[in-house]
Image (cartoon, rainbow, N blue to C red):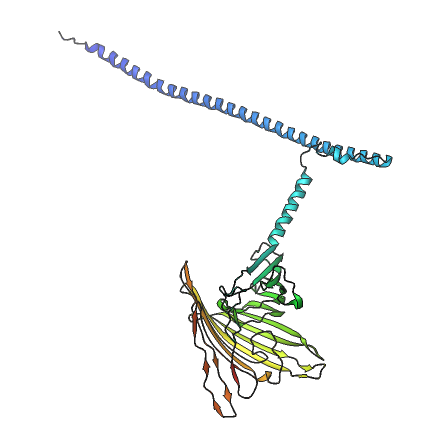
Amino acid sequence: MPCILPLKRMPRLIALLGAAALTSRAQEPVAQQNDLQEQLQQLKRQYDTTTRDLEQRIAALEQQIQKQKEAAEKSKEGTVSSVELAAQQAAQKAVLGESDEVGAKFQGQLPSEPTYDLLREADQKIEKLNEQAQSFEFHGYFRSGYGLNGKGGSQVAFQAPGADAKYRLGNEAETYGEFIFVNNWLNAEHNSDKAWMKTEVMIEANTGNYASYANFTGNTGNDQFRLREAFVRAGNILESQPDAKFWAGERYYRRQHIEINDFYPLDMSGYGAGVEDWNLRIGKMSVAFLAGARPDIVTQNGNYAKNNIDVRLYDLKGPFGLYALWFDFANAKGGTTPSGTVIPTANGYAFGLRHQRLEWHGGYHAFSIQYGKGAASNFSTSIDNPDPFIKSSERLLIAEHLLVQPNDRFAIMPIIQRVATKVYDRTANRRRPPILQPPSAAFVHDVRKLVQRLPGPGRWNPIRG
């Protein structure tokens, strides 16, 4: 039979169920609180353990540092006491006239750690050595070789008749070197924001490959040594012109050189002073006073000398590359020699234009044209033989050379050279046809038309080289 509860017991049953539910809900916060307390206790224990470990490590480190200090003090005291002891013993034996080489006996028997003073002194010496290593530079160039001719004699370099230059590769029968010594007196680190100053000396050595020690009668074929450069240069002196460089002395001065046959269209090397790389915004400018003298020609004014004022504008940007302008005024002071020969005073001027394409088919291209008259007609500081017609001498020089390098393994410098000679015969009142030397082809392209008007009535001869 189904069990039917009496209606009277229903309220009691509901009350019991409600009380049980309330009891279970009240126990949940108590359990959560116990968990939090346990986590807090664990964190405290971990903190205590970590703190204890750190304190032990700190104490150990302090003890180690203290021991090191005590050891250093003891070694210092030991070093000083040993030195004083040795000094006292040496003094006593010196007074008593006795000596048994105390230094040799005790050397190496009293080791000691280096003191702070010794370390500082070593650091200073190392720093000075680094400065000296940075301040000194060495540059140079040399070539050497020996060849035989077809008959068993020594090699003779081939040079075209009447030419002042020759091709170089395998055609230089001498040992030649240029050795350059540079010392940086200021700013050896080459900082771009500081002033700098350096000196440069270059020694040239030239031998004829005659003997390892050439000492022949009359100095024939003996070795030659020359001081070709000895000058000082400084830069970054003016805040408005940080690139400007000031120099004074003897130097190679901004030479224009064709390497393949060692030809110099313009060579104003000599003694003097000047400034270069003066920024004009459109380009750069250099101004120099350059001079030279001949000791074999002496007048009442002294050695026969030529003075030059050289002015150049360069790095001028234009169509197809960079352009440069050049002007030179020269004066050669004459006089009377002790034998009574009159040396005329000669003035002269020269100017030129140069064009360069520095990035051209992997190489470069250069073209120049220049004209000179009088004492400046040789485009050099060298002094020609003085004669009555030096004032009227003229020279026109056109030079072109290029380098083609299509890749890293192949390069070519084709050369085409042409020299023309013109002679005007006033006696016959007619111009003779020009004599043209056939062009030659080799490993450089060098188109050159050189014409010089030499002293004399209407005579024209070729420019050599």
